[in-house]
Image 1 (cartoon, rainbow, N blue to C red):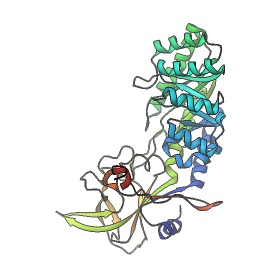
Image 2: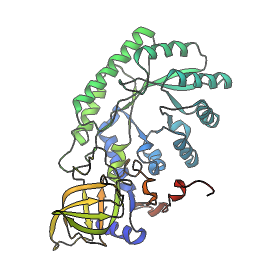
Image 3: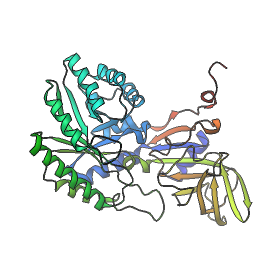
Image 4: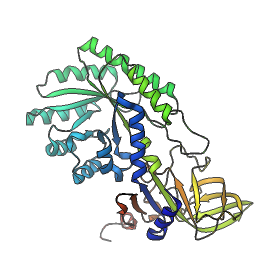
Length: 395
């Protein structure tokens, strides 16, 4: 965004504040789709930023839903069920029943475990309705099922007249910076799908793969997986698979990160023991960069209003929490640090607004706004007090 637009957002909405630029989100999604070409469809993992779900339902081919809260967001937004992949490590029987009673067999569902499979099978038998299942293969962690369990589930599915295996789901983590790591995963998936067909006769026709592409949050730390050549190389790896089904690339951070800004006002400045401290009205309860360790890396940020003639110095930026861990960045070069000015943290469109300790110290939740050339400024969430959530109800 232009600095004039950010300054307008500060003047109109105050700080702390999140701004999501929908034009940037659209451009980034289109960039990724272009570089992947025909190799894969796109799935948006809405956990990265649920405020962007409605727009991403139009830009991506699918939305991944990982909780009942996310399901209810999609229900309120009237996202077509055919666009939804109902995922999540915890899907209780009542949760599955509520979702499927509403969507029927029009949405796709992942199978994380034997227990989840039985809940899905119970519903499909009781309603005599077909379900589209994506069996999640474990990457060696708590998610999904190992190969032996996977084979056993397939045998059970063959016994049902209503269940069908539409695809395989595979995701092993995020912030992957190495193309070689992606190659190893894709080679493993390719080999497994071929072995699966040989051993069981199950010819899986769809793959939902989360590559966990890293986002360059910090200066001087750009991963090879994120730029144009990284996505082109990913497309080459997918095209090289011997298995020949349909592939959907599932991501959240890679789509959304660059569209977001976190704006926080400077409330106090001081020097203790030779270190310059800048105290802001936000903090790491509201803004979190994956990989940040007590401010050891320098994020992309700027000062507003900008004054070229201002003196530059080294500053440690701290938030409003009563915690020595509330450090947003350490020893960064900033010009014109003084109360009343605003720091703008860039690349805060994914997870940053969702992962903080929102209830700590009972600070209010900041306003959330969006901007696009077509729609202008929109208030997505008003400032919300959290202190009632930290009290005994009816006190």
